[in-house]
Length: 454
Image 1 (spheres, one colour):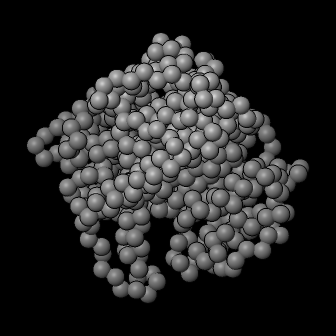
Image 2: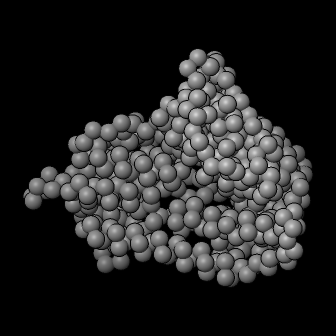
Image 3: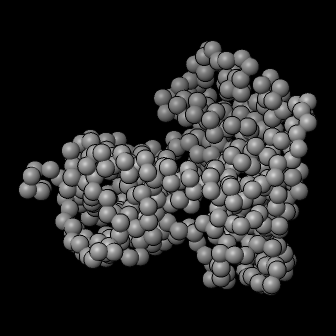
C-alpha cells in the first residue's frame, strides 16, 4: 500500500483490457499508472478491430451499390479512393485515442509512453525517451496484446508481402490479392478487398473456410465468395513464397502455385510477452508463450494479473475489456464472478455477417448433451426480402426439457447486431416461450429469432 493509503496499480499495455482496467481502478480510488509503447487504445484501435471494420463499412456500401438494381435503383459502381479511405481510418483511430487520453487524464491516470519490464513481483522498470524509471506497485496488470504471426517461410516487406497491419495504408488497392489463412481475419479481408476491387484468391489449409465453425455456416460464406468470383484453393497448406518484380507466388504443399500481385498473411498471432520480464517476477508462461492466468485472470504471482491477447483467452476486444473491468475490482478487494467464456458473443464481419453465442449443436453432440435445434431462413423474413438480403438463417439451440435458450447462430445481414438478443437470452437463461411472446417490430430481421423460438 502506498504511503497515502491509495493502492498503486501498474498497467502495462493500453488496449481494451488496459484502458478498461485503468478507468475502473481509478474510479475505485487506486493510483493508476498506465504504460503504453505505442498509443493509448492499443492494437485494437491501431491495426485490428477499428481499422478493419472501417474498411468493412466501405466494402458494404460498395456491395449495396452493386446490388442496387434489385431494389429498382440505377447506381454506378463506386470508385475507391485508397488515400481518402486511409485518411478516414487514421482520423477515426486518432479520435478514439484522443478520447481515451482525455478520459484517463480526467481520472488522474498517469500515462507513460515507454516499454515496461518486471523486475520483481512488486516492481518494474520503464524505458522512456527521457530515461528509465522504477515503479513500485501493489498490483499489476499485463495486457500487452499480440502481433501477427509470420511463418518462417515468409519474408514480410510491407509492399507486396503483407500482414494485416499493412492492409490499412496501401497506396492503391491490390490488383490480385492472395490471402493465406481462412480463419476470421482471413475471410474478413477477403470480403473487404474483393469489394474494393481486388481479384482475390484464398488459400484454405482445411476442407472448408472458418474450420472451427459449423459447416453449414461456412457453406453460406463459401457460396457468397464463389458468387463474387473469389478463387478458393481448398485443402492447400502454404509452405513458401516466390517474390518477382511484379508478382508473388504462394507455394502450397500439394504443388499448387497461387499467383497474385500481393500476398496477405492472416494466419494467427503471437503474444507480446518476450520482453516483459516474466521470469524475473516468477510469472509462468504457457508452452505457446502466453501469460498463464486462472479464472480471475491472476497469474502465478498474486500481485500480477494478465488480460487480453497476451493470455490467449478468446482473442476478442470485448472479452479483453470485460477482463480489465473485473480485474480492477478483484485487484482492489471487491467480489467478482469469473467470466463464462461459453457465453461470449462473437462475430465475423463479412457480408453476410456471421455471429454466434453459447452452445452450438455440434458442441452439444461432442459432450453428449441433448439439445433442440431449430432454424429459420431469412428467405422467410419479410424485412430481409424487401431489403434484398435473404442469404442466411437464424439457428437456435435450446434445452428440450426446460426450453431455456442455450445458444444461437445468425448468418445474414447485420447478424452482429441481432446476436445481442440471443446473447442476453443465454446470459439470463430466457426460455424459448419468452422469445415467442416478446412483441417485436414488424417487419424486422429480429422476427426470425422469435420464429426460430416458435
